[in-house]
Amino acid sequence: MKAIVVYLSTSGNTKAMAEAIANGIESKHVDAKAISFYDVKLEDLNGSDAIAVGSSTFYYRMLQPMEKFMDETLASTNPKGKLGAAFGSYGWSGEAPILIAEKMRDMGMIVIDPVLRILHKPTDKDLQECKRLGVDIAEKLKHKSKTPQPQGTPS
Ligand SMILES: Cc1cc2nc3c(=O)[nH]c(=O)nc-3n(C[C@H](O)[C@H](O)[C@H](O)COP(=O)(O)O)c2cc1C
Image (cartoon, rainbow, N blue to C red; front, side):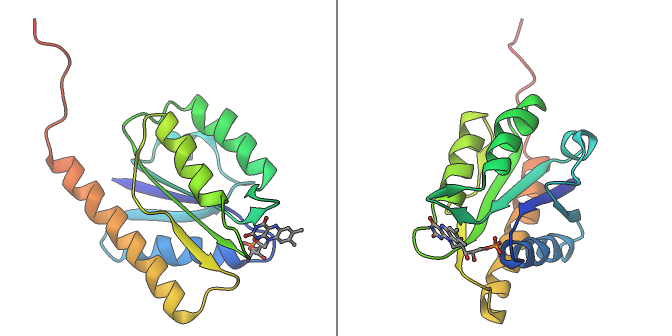
């Protein structure tokens, strides 16, 4: 099982969240890495059972390159049925994670509710919350791998 945490962050706030989420996943012995949206490769996405995506909120939406990544890159990997999580730092309105989760659901992903939003720079307590989301991702992945998946329609 593998998880990837993809982020786009202008001043490091959402990046710090991503790293804490990846730590939380790894603490449950699930392979995870936090990776900047600029460096992520298609094979990273294709090889991941869980995909967490984070963007800070700018002008009441996610950062524009992240929107393009969701609509074009992530959608092209057909992530239907994969576990998803959305997160991001914000200043006052915080729409980005909600919009990310919406796009994930439109792609058929199973999205952890609620999304994780942190005001400005995460405090130590906030980072613990991020880590807890990582633990939740790992536990849901393990549970999912134990649950029999539909094998197609019976003949
Ligand atoms: C030009 C600009 C526009 C912003 N627009 C919003 C906004 O519409 N809503 C909001 O909640 N925060 C907004 N913010 C605040 C950022 O989301 C916040 O500073 C966040 O912590 C940045 O995180 P990052 O370092 O991960 O990019 C804006 C910040 C800037 C500089």
